[in-house]
Length: 309
Image (cartoon, rainbow, N blue to C red; front, side, top):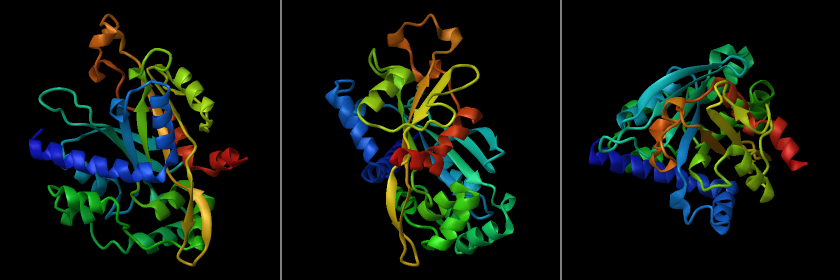
């Protein structure tokens, strides 16, 4: 990975995290509590396992467009995922190596809504917005310009939706409603708990800590989502509610973004390596459809409404 790529990627990721932290109070609440409890000495001790984005699967947008940014910055496209019930496709992208070593840059998980699988009315609503984007915006973006990429990821691609349109989409696809309002806003980042000190380095222990400081956890499929091989355990907060102003002047509280937590077990073939020698490459990599399917629901009303009760 070249130095200019490292600088660009670092700038883009810092920009994403800065805005995301401002918008999602749980980010600071968790980090500050970790420092208070002396789990970490400062925020730089937190390993970001992955970040995630949601997109609309239309010809000029979706994964095929979004991925161009991070493929250019050295990421590698990995496994495909199909979420049949939610009508979603997804891929994850592994971070580039730095100086021949597995880097500390986060993995990236990008999903897209299969818009054409929705009802005609939902398709009409979505395309009335996405059709404002006449061509693939990534094709006209200078991917070597860190400032330009950073601004692109925080500028709206289409007009603010009306409450009527948002509500109509919400009835059919909560994912669609989330994207039509939030666009490319960072959906979540993920704290790697397996690197934390004893007493906090498992999902179960960390969830206990989180609930002890008043964090509401997504309980869809159970608070801990476990892959069939037992190597990947995940949990997440319930999405923060934001006051959203719609194009018709209506203001409503809707789901914003959330925080995820991941524990990746050491792979069996590396079980003999001492803990101080364990690196990311020795742990279970990738993602799991069943886990991710329930993590998506962190922004769904089935979770956010329960959190407000």
